[in-house]
Image (cartoon, rainbow over the protein chains, first blue to last red):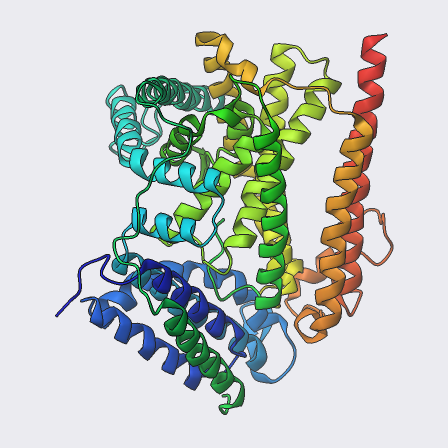
Amino acid sequence: MARVPGQVDARATVIAALAFILAVALMPAGAYVAMAAAWLLVATAGALRGIAPLTLARRGGIVFPFVLAALPLIFIRSDEVIWEGLVGPFSLHVSGVGLRIALSALLKAWISVQASIVLVATADAPTIVVALRRMRLPDAIATSAGLTIRYLELLRDEAQRMLRARAARSVSPVGVGGERVGGSIAWRARTTGNLVGSLFLRAYARAARVEEAALSRGATGSLSTGSLPTADRYLGVKVVAAVTLLLALSAFGQVVPRL
Amino acid sequence: MHLPDGFLAPQLALALWVATAAIVGFALRRLSASSDEASAAQRPILMGIVGAFIFAAQLFNFPVAAGTSGHLLGGVLAGYLLGPWAGTIVMTTVIGIQALIFQDGGLLALGANIFNMGIIGTLGGALVARSIATALGGSRVATIAAAGVAGWLSVMAGAGVTTLQLGLSGTTDVSIGLPAMLGIHALIGIGEGLITIAALTFIATTAPDLLTLGAPTRASATRRILVGSGISLLVAALAALFASADPDGLQRVALTLGFHTAANTPPFELFPGYTIPGIDSATGTLLIAVVGVGIIFTAILLLSRIAARRGRQ
């Protein structure tokens, strides 16, 4: 039976996710066995939340483009050359160490982002903010974050309407046939900047209205985010257990044979 | 560029978390110390809604050159609209939500992402913009132009620092990554700068009273230089720390790609040896880069000070 968001103390979820990501980060390059174990753990957590492992794996794919950052290492490091040859006019070699670093970074990023995905599937955004506030997140940030989440969709819709209006007036960056329409870079930037400016003015006017309404209802400046839907009495014990397990996972990463 | 988890060395990620927490904590103290009723500090609802605005504004984009789209990060804009301290808090919140809710950037890497975009981009950007605006005479046009320059700089600095952090973690090669990242972001930054200028011009024209929120205040140049040097030293210390902790990850090796030999002899050498394959350790190069940034930063502040004094006479 899949549990609905909020049935788990969100503090536990946040701490578990952070400890898990730290444990994965601490794994040395090439500890693929430990990484596979970590992935099984996150896939299990995901499955308990009703997310199929392959769906989770696919959604984790958003980090793949970042491997570009590590790619040069494969060809630049000169240690442990596993292939050497000519590609066109360039002599090229592939370094085993570089390959291991790039692949490990990619796998770690991919496993970690899946942990984040499971985190938001287990607790919804406002609950996470409440949990963070209970974990001593400064009030100003918690209030700001809570309101940002609350007004996000509204302002994004407004921005999208403006973009549609821009496109409808032929200011869209690329025309139907792929040709560029609109004026010079400066002109295009000014059009876009005007949209940003008018969106800010609308947001500001909205903020002023909300402020007036809040003040007239006796607001004190801090957003009341209510209490956690579920507060776990044994939170401390569970957190210690989870962190111990994850440290063990990390230690496993240190001792397991590396490829 | 939101770094995901896995690419940063955990020590570096944790160190940047500590640095970020300290600076954001300082910004929070500055905010609560402000007693001005109209200031953004006393308006939590405004800060929250402006956070949502920054999110939405990041949707706006336009092509700068082939394949590169100009878009807004909004760091300097937030710093101008709310003031540097409140702007930093708002950007911290936005980047945090992007990581927590939208998986845009990692959680362990969140400290680094806030540092690179929120602190360098917003706090640094807004302070640099103030210096430039003061140096240019402080008129409305100067203030807005300064925001544009700072917007471009914030994108470049963010990209450069991100690459250096990846280099320190041993997950990228700085000699290839840095020119590539700075090259792309020079174009992206133009978008940021131009949109920032246009947005501020629009707001200044339509609702001139709102922009007084971010009007330059007179902070002493000595203090700015102290802050700038402090940040540079912090970065240098971090670089040295991790260079000594993980020499393997930083070991620079000679480039074997044929086309790179062309870069062997630059037209001039500011720091002899600061060339691509000539040295066997990236540590020295990184330290020189950090010190160089510090020198340039201090020089800009000093020159701004001199220019401002000249302008008043």
